[in-house]
Amino acid sequence: MHVAARSALIATTAFLTLVDLFATQAILPSLAAAYHVRPAAMGLAVNAATLGMAIGSLAVAFFSRRIERRRGVMVALAALALPTVLLAHAPGLGAFAFLRVLQGLFMSTAFALTLSYLAEQCSAAETAGAFAAYITGNVASNLIGRLLAAAAVDHLGLAGNFYLFAGLNLAGAALVYFGLARTPPASMPAASPFAQWAEHLRNERLRAAFAIGFLILFAFIGTFTYVNFVLVRPPLALGMMALGLVYLVFAPSIFTTPLAGRAVARWGTRPTMWGALLLAIAGLPLLLAPALGPVLLGLALIGVGTFFAQATATGFVGRAATSDRGSASGLYLAAYFLGGLAGAAALGVLYDRYGWGACVAGIGAALIVAALLAARLQVRETTNERTAPLYGPAR
Image 1 (cartoon, rainbow, N blue to C red):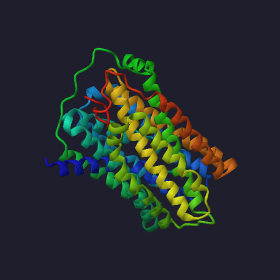
Image 2 (tube, helix red, strand yellow):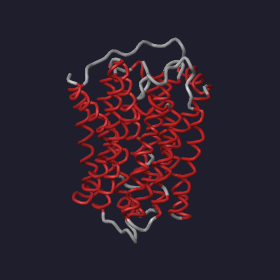
Image 3 (cartoon, rainbow, N blue to C red):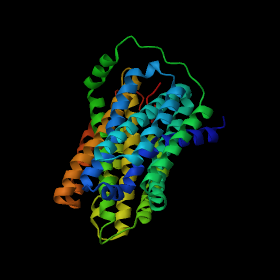
Image 4 (cartoon, rainbow, N blue to C red):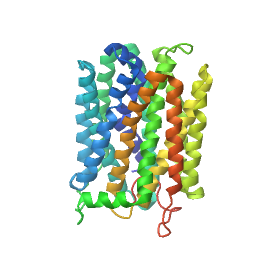
C-alpha cells in the first residue's frame, strides 16, 4: 500500500475509533437541559466513558496476546454502535452514564488493539509515521467529532445525533474489515500479566509517566468539559452551532502533534514535556477573559500543549519499559483515562461550588504537578532515546 494511502487509512481508523469520546462534550449544555441536572452531574456522566476506557485498556493489556488484532478491532467498533444507539433513549442520568462506560470499553479495546497492530505490522522505518498518522486521526476526532455533534443536535436533535454516531461506528468496523490484514495472535509470554505489571510499577520512571498521563487528561477534560457552560452563558452567550465551531481550536494540534517526535529527537523527553506543559499553562489565564478571542487562543494553546505532552509521554513509556511494552502501554492508557474521569468529577465540584476561576486554578495545579514529575522522565544510558520511535510501544 502506498505510504499516503496507508497513512490515510490509519488516520481514518483512529478518527472513527475515538470520535464518540469527546464529541458528546460539545453538546453538554443541551444534555444538561434535557436531563434537568447541574453541569457537574452531566459532565461526570458524559465523561464516564473514560472509566470504560481505563477498564478496557487494562483488559487488553491482560488478554491482547490471545486476540487477533483485526477481528478484535472490527468487533469492538461494531459493538460500539449498540450503546451509541441506546444513548438516544437513555431514560435517566444513571442509564446515560452506564452506556457511556460501555462506549469507553469498546473504544479503548479498538484503540489499544490498533496500537498493537501497528507496532507489530510496521517496520522500524514505518513505525513513527504510522503512529503519527494514528495520533493525528485522534486529534482530528476531537475537532470534527465536536463539530458534527453540535451540528447534528442543532438540525436533528439529541436522538438524531446519537444515530449519526452509531453509523460512524459501523463505518469504522467496515473500514477495518476491508482495510486491515488479518494477523495471528502473538505468542504467550512466560511471565503472568500481573508479574509484568508489578515490574512496571516498580519502575520509578514509568510511575512518573503514568502519573503525568493521569494529569494530562485530568486537565484536558476539565478544560473542555466545563468551558462549554462558560461559552453559552453571558457575556459570550454562544449558540449551539457557534459552540461547535469553537472547537476549530483543535486544528493547530493536527499539524503540531506529529512534530513531537522531532522535538524529542532534538531536545530530549524532559525539555519537550516541559515546553508542552508550559504552553498549556500559558493558555489558562486567557480562559478567564470576558471576550471570545482570548478564550479561543487559550483553548488552542491548551490543546496544542496537552496533545504534544500526550504524544511525548506515550513514546517515553515504550522506551522506558524494560519488558512487555504492550502491558506498560496498557497501564499508561488506564492511568490516562482514569485521570479524565477524576478531572470531570473533581473539577466539576470546583466549578459548581466556586465558579470557573476555581476550576481553571485546579487545571493549572494539575499541569504544574505534571511538570514537576517530568523531571523523572529520563531513560537509562542503554536506551537510545534520540533514535527510538516516539509513538507507542517499541517492538
